[in-house]
Image 1 (cartoon, rainbow, N blue to C red):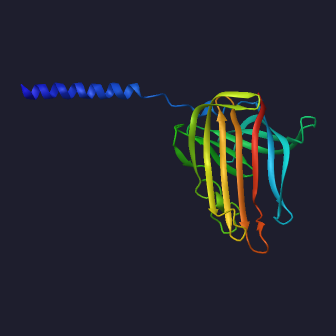
Image 2 (cartoon, helix red, strand yellow):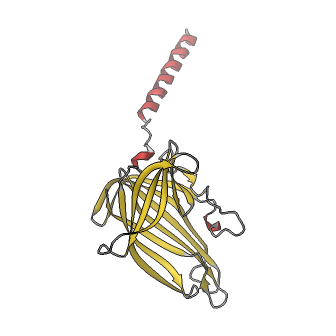
Length: 244
């Protein structure tokens, strides 16, 4: 009698667990929600670019606009379906667009890759879940002795603020996500007599739109010879101002 009673209690417990699991089992967010790709689609960004001049002893900010326009669905060098994306640049909205370069956007079941200036980044990856991490720079040469991008080694991209609303200027986005790529400080930046390095990178994507904001900053300070910022240091901030 007791054996049968324990058996029935066990059955009820299993059913209860399954019921609880179903109540918290939310459908997975498709990658295409945050990186929709379609021929003719475009996005215009206001860009502030920080560069170092005078042998790394001065900095200046240059402002301009860029437009990314999706052209055609073709094949990349791995024979995968890939959208060709043209990049245009102009000083202000009063100027004509000038063609600048070509990028590639590749979306498959597991990840969204972006290829620009021969650098392949894994921008988004399944599953879209808070705290999920992946090595977004896995295809970047950060290990060769002569690589100028060694500071990008082993970056862990992390999802944050999924579904949060964001306002940029006069644009409002109801659902966005943040990809935190790096936030690193080596040394003491306030010390002019010591080496320091700063690496910061973050991107925001909006549902049904794609990339809406990007902040990137890399600085390597050398204290010798009076102090200077090493070659390859720069910063960039991109804010979406128009899209279709």
